[in-house]
Image (cartoon, rainbow, N blue to C red; front, side, top):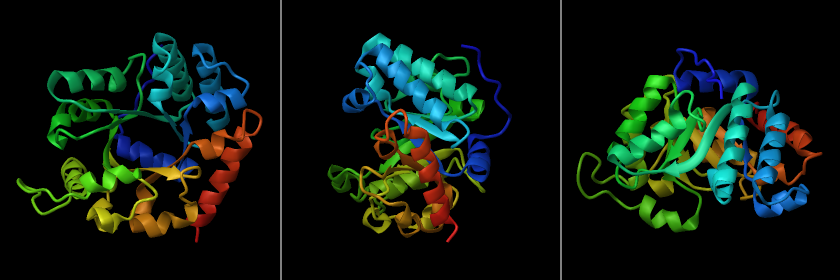
Length: 287
């Protein structure tokens, strides 16, 4: 793979540029087994590759961001990773921002190795941003943050996710340290924001579109210059009409992710589905 030449801009600056020119919609690339069947593709490495490349082709020129869900590629081992590499390469060559949804998390040299795999220019898996988990503390992500900053990349740290099992942990109150009395989710946002600055930082958080910010001890002002990866629109039940009520003024920072709600249109309908959702989202944001 020939490394794409990166500008000196930060990831946050690049994200703002994409918002201005291509909008906020992010197309998920999630090759569920049932979707591969609906697309008349085999559930193997070649099917994954064809699926990924078709979605990239449909997304290019219509949106500015795609998000491959790494887990669906990992199911097929090395063949799946080869398909993922081809998908990422095609997306980046099409000047799409690629968010690798891998949810990596660890500490020390282990998490540094994850960052090297996904954020190093020229790596076969090079993406523009990576989803990460801070279960061991945001400080455990210092190596990925350093690498991301060096190469104009971004991170999205899990903070308040849509799955109902998460609320007990993510809304729990921190007992000790600098963020005592804040919720876990709020403490993650606050610590991430230490590395951010206006107008938009390069280190974001994942906040599901079906959550209520107050339930997690958060307000829109906490996210004033924080990129938000907002999954859950479409198939998972969130509607674009609730964007403002969910995120308030911080909706201007949201990467609005939709996957199955687009992909179920099939190979012949996916481009039109993307165009339709882009129009719907812009209509809501123009109100």
